[in-house]
Length: 457
Ligand code: ARG
Image (cartoon, rainbow, N blue to C red):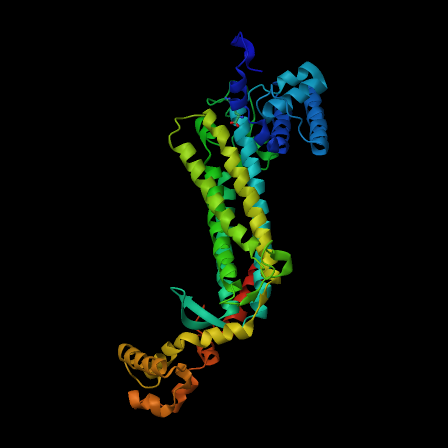
């Protein structure tokens, strides 16, 4: 299609390094859609004869049906999806197909196709995020009063409720949703009509093609239109961070499923056995989600590095934007769905979690807080007193809440019986009722607020 000035064809290796059809055939829907919008506009503007525009339109519809049914038949002589669609069109309708590429270049064409693809990928990610959020809300509600150890430095810090812990992941998803929505809003300008890089002398109507493809408006600068891949970076960044969130959840599931923890039982549907150890039940799905996140992060970095040295406007390096984009999209969607399934079906061992929450004198802060609130003692001094109580409990090999009043009063006579009541894990979580705190009532409120937000979304 570009052979006019050449005498011989490209070397075999040149052909193969130049070819992207194996990857970008995935863009056939977007390519046909954008081509239809372009052809219809050319016809309306009188740039090509109306009957040719109509023939192109009908031909493109037929090609879409064919591709949907049979897939794109790869032809090694044609570089990319744009050429494949145009070639099929030529076979289908004859020379009128040659008018489609008027006032257009593959540079604005691929930018437009890619934006349509990323927009769809964002919508799929948003739907999958909603699915995971729904699973989290269901389990958080059921486990709103289940007590587990809350960790800092992976050391038991203070008891928390499992519902509260799960809802922490919901907050990450809310931010992910907002990042994807933001990326979607920012990308929604149509590059079509920028042509190769400078615009075109034909009297095209960019507003109408932008509207036909559901973009908010045409892009403002033709050079930027064909050189810009920020929207892919925005998408990959949102995907990378979302995958990091999934990876943290996957890591916790893996840890909790490990025998020394045994906080959870993995569902059959989301675990695998070992070919040698009959006793094994492995958290493969969680581990793969954790692994996929590494690849998605690599995809983001690949694209940033691809762009950083590129002079304006289009350069063929940009053809390599698709592999990381498609890879990240596929991995993210499967990860979100797998985590939704896992969260919905995992078994929580509430007794085991509660027992672990009692370890590590996790209510020492509650003793200090009682000394402050009821004893009028400054927090720093209260911290010291509670620390001495922990030392005695540790020396005796008992939990803090098992110390007698006499033993506590030997540390500080201001400690009263009421303080001891505060040292159970139940009392501890119930007391943490500040806004955003772990108390079961706050968790129930947070879930209700999340559900209301979903309804108004
Ligand atoms: N296959 C190319 C890509 O994905 C399409 C644009 C080609 N443009 C060009 N001037 N060679 O980037």
